[in-house]
Image 1: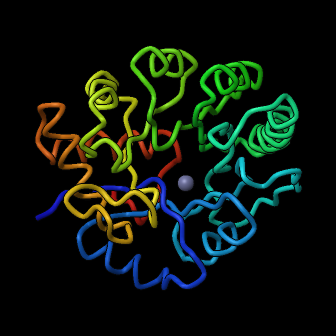
Image 2: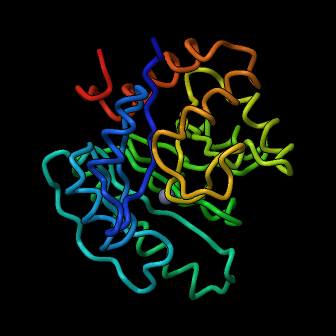
Length: 247
Ligand SMILES: [Zn+2]
């Protein structure tokens, strides 16, 4: 019997058959948290049938629309900071404004947040510090070093790893994945992107989280059963009990 795993971060595009992908995932004992990040993905997440998060990510330039609490919504996200395509004080201030609006909503609704951060370590850290959210959340598809992970853990955040940790050039990230304590680690696909080795290049899907989980378990020197138990317990501690995620 396969251990139950939760893919804590996947997106559905409108052309994806979310219900089919969820069924396929359930067949290999994978539960799902569907995540938004823009108007389209918020809609597909909210109508997928899985527990979901809605939010407005770094790409929604100039937009800070009000979020609405919907039944089945268990988190706010993704939101956060990304300066990969360039940095300017205006870009930072736009992203900070959008972050503050959504962090305020998360606080009001007492929901955890799902944070995206890329080439934005210092800004992300200072924004999380300022927000001082009582519920905290997860830094998803983490790509940072041990020092950054340690600072985020100190702020009370969980760290989630995607298929990037299986990529050949990810030695620094593997060091981080070995470092994160067992009660703070989560696993995800970030599908449809970032399919893990040996499936790299395919369109990613929630069922593939098993590959990344098996990789992380081996890296950390535990069995897949143990890793699944640890990450499922963490998922429930952060996002609450969800019947699809097992007892
Ligand atoms: Zn994402």
